[in-house]
Length: 171
Image (cartoon, rainbow, N blue to C red; front, side, top):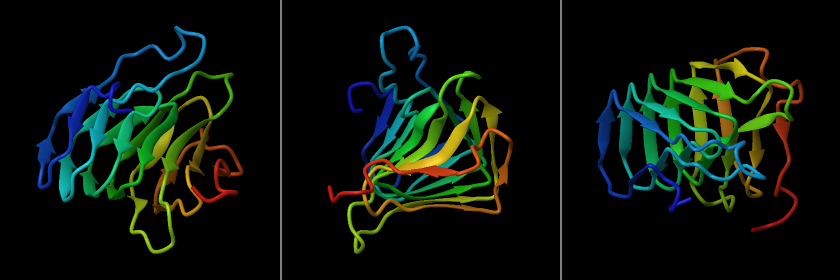
């Protein structure tokens, strides 16, 4: 993750406005898709206003800390919002770039490690749309926490909504 990131911020109290973070790695060029992080966010009290994040796999690594995303856009196909973060995505557009006809991707892969550990991703308002098919997420660790609240969801979301990953064991 750290090696593939186009942009990395590991400081507290960082604010960005109206910037696009993009990783143009072609996930289908090789034998298997690989990480192509557009932004790795790992400080506390970080905010992004009107920013866009474009990639395919692991587009936005919401690594650690408390983060606020307002009226931004995040596009990708596989686990494109992932990490241990404790974040709010307020009125953000989440767009699937999964090619039609392929297996469904996953919007989120949250990694909260314990019941007493703070963390979770909250999507308030905004939308989930795009191409292909998407699960809303899969649990990277047993205590993964993701909430979609009053979010418009297009036909790209597969009916079960969620898929288990590593949820069956402690990490």
